[in-house]
Image (cartoon, helix red, strand yellow):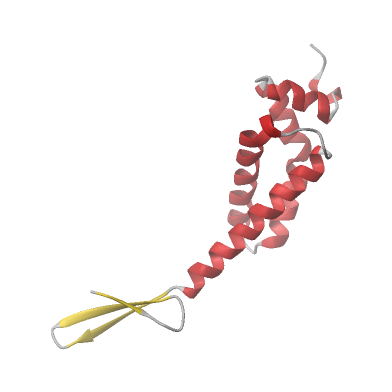
Length: 123
């Protein structure tokens, strides 16, 4: 077999689509710095960038069978990376908006979950 580092992305993708994990690993190795760089620009913490990185390559692995070469692999990968970054950002914003407030009232404790201007009372 040829040295994987000399194969084109197209050749690696076709091999990976047939189940060649070494070919998939070569694709990851070839593009991992760019994915991490994009993720790091979207988030402030390295841990979040690592989470995005893992999610991106998990989605690539799951979706590689559907890749039809209608665009460059790098374009497809960039789109997946951007989508994961945006999803991550939206989830973080929702978490930041969700505030818990505990109010002792007489012998009861009411817990308010506020995700908007209309808090929900949870007993």
